[in-house]
Image 1 (cartoon, helix red, strand yellow):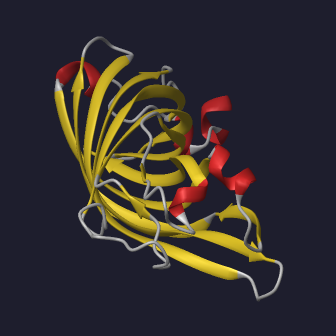
Image 2: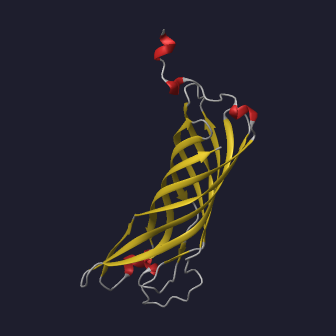
Image 3: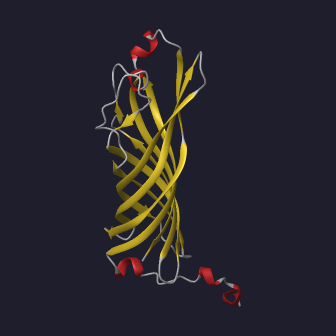
Length: 221
C-alpha cells in the first residue's frame, strides 16, 4: 500500500549510471557577480590633489560553455569547463571638487576552471556536492598592452588571471541527464592591476585582485 503513494521522484532513475560511465560531458549557463579586492598604494596618502577615496563596485554578468568530467571513484569526479564570460567591474573615484568619476573595466573572457568534485549518493534522485579547484581566465578586452598616459581615465587589468575557487550545489537525476545548480566563489590570487606609477588612477592603487561569485545551471549526460 505504501508503494502506491510513493512519489515517482523517489524511484531511483538508473542508479548505476555513475558506475557504467567514466567520462561525461555537459553544458552550463551561469550568472555572475564580478568584484575586486583593492589595496591602496602609499602614494595615495601623499597626494596633493582632490582625490579623497577609491571604491571598487560589483557588477552583474553571465556566461555559457561546455563541460567535460571524468569519474575517479563512485563519489569523486574531475571536472573541466570551457566558459565564455561577459561582465564589467566598476571603480568609483571620489573627488573633493568635482562629481564622482566611475571607470568601467569591461571583460570578455575565456575561462577554464578545473575542479575536484565530491558528490553524495542519490537514492531519491537528489544529491548534494562540494567542489574546489583552480581557474585560468584570459580577457580578450584587456588593456594591458595599451600605453596609458598619466591623466588618461583608464585602469587596466592583466589579460591572464588565476583564481582558486570553491563551492557547493544540489544535483537532480532525470531520465537522460543529471541537472545541477552550483554556487561558487572564485578569488584571484595574482595581482591583476597594470599599475602606471604616475597615473591619477592606477597609480593610487597597489593591487587589484579580481573575484567572481557565480550561480551555474548545468546539465550532464
